[in-house]
Image (tube, rainbow, N blue to C red):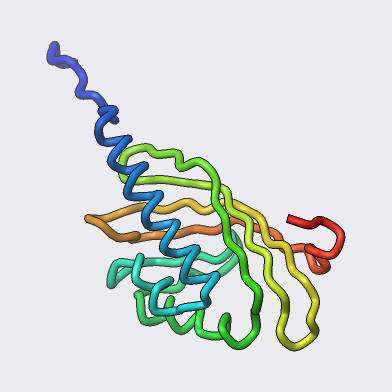
Length: 145
């Protein structure tokens, strides 16, 4: 065992930087979902990013594939609101809780989706996003925001 001191694994400045960047990326992602603007939403992902919608979903690889996955949102969801909570940071990772309310265009039914997002950043973009969430159909009519 070396007598050298162990390096700090997460200097507070790095945590603050990751938190600030994470807030900006999640806010942009949420605005893209709410508008809905697939271009804005996909702008937060690195070229070779990985997106995992749920723990049981197959990973979607590459920003073009991620963009294609989100393309149906403007056609299936309306009156979308997105909000997220505190950003928690550790190294190049950050996480937050989120809530997304929307109306299904085809049926008019409200959906209340809530969960957590875990992201790894590389440079200024998300290199991996994992979502853990649940949606409840009929959301807004009984639980007003």
